[in-house]
Length: 629
Image 1 (cartoon, rainbow, N blue to C red):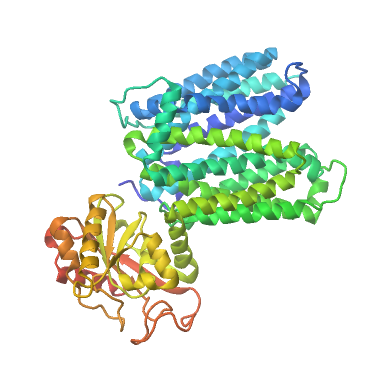
Image 2 (image 1 turned 90 degrees about the vertical axis):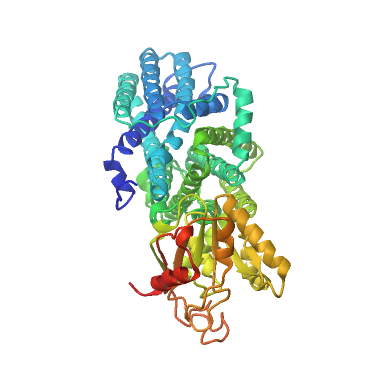
């Protein structure tokens, strides 16, 4: 176990993370400095007959993305087969060589050479992509993964922003612009190679892998490999949709600033700054909101925010009066523009909340032996979705749609796509409901959650106080839990639907329904055989007086055939809340009888081994955890 740290920023002081962070940060900054400087050069300074200025950005962007389609599958294999640190250093040497060629291209203003460098930088980024996301799970534990991904996502967008700003400033320097860009690109590549030297060893996860050099067949194989874990595959689609969504906004900022907001180039740059800060802020917020776990309940929250503020951006920008090209100061002096900037900042903040947990989930749930190939499949899908976004948005604009109308269409499409994904993978929706319940309806304090195993089969035994016990347990666990529950709860209108989505296992007494009773134990055994978590409420029914009832023998019956660890858990201060019974009466009467934000808690204790587990021992452990500390 790594030394605990107070927050994600503390990772920057640790060798297992800091050199890697700065290596990828410098690489992203260099890519964008080069691309933006080159775009400005061929748009404003050079006249190239065969590449009109209007198409320059499109051609450069397409050349950069092309290697992701061609070589992602191969790069994923390389990252699984070889030590990732060796690959990182190789990639940084490659960057240094590319930037040496680019420096010559800028000084001599050789456009074909610079276009070749764009393609080679795409190859460089394609090789680095799977390494980047497969490196983190090898060096960070589950509690650090969300924070680490948040830092990488934030760093990437800050690097993109700085690269664009610096590239634009340098190339605009009279007389020495191309030389200044050439020197800067070489310097950044050299510093990046130096930081790569301090990245710790990251042993190969599948050294026996035989490389398939055919990119077409290997791309298909990677997509099939990713499809093998349906939650992971649909999460890949979710991330790719986020890139589709973001690419529409980023690609249309210049036109939006000029034609809709009536601003000059400074206003277009401001939109990029606001968008980047929003993404970075949302990415960093993930660790705090997730309580340092991989919390995919943030994904629906992010999707809702993305749609709400994309739609509001349309209404905020559609009625702005015509004006001449405004400077930054004139633009900011008008209150109507602040709503546009707020929409953009919040839209991108929620995109950060949406993407970081998805990346962390993919890293956590993918098999370590082919994790890099799963990330490679993600890069292939991202590239396809970004190309599709360019084609669809371009077609809409040519058909007469305005830029705000394109933003509106994407915002509404986001709601449809997100809803579809959450219906296909109910785990996202369930985690969102548990996230809201544990942070909005209740003030939920969790103690000892490190005792809930991050991997492997285990049985959780918990006291049964309210109708939302299972939802609160979901909120406390970094992994999905399958619950064994009294079949009567499935007849309840809302909760029944919720627990059916959670694939809860219905159980009845042997006397009343022997078939359901036996089927429950068969299903429970399958859950443990699959290496998953199973939760049982051994009291058999909700407490009617707030005290712990005698435990029934179902757990012992399961342990006979499936000897796994048993984790005692106690829910505290739930008795008397809206979802519990009160003095033997009904639950869910008199809303807010304990006021808003009622404090409740959960305490988990060290696991019992199968050999030391008895009904009395389990009950004593749970009773002990129910006592105030």
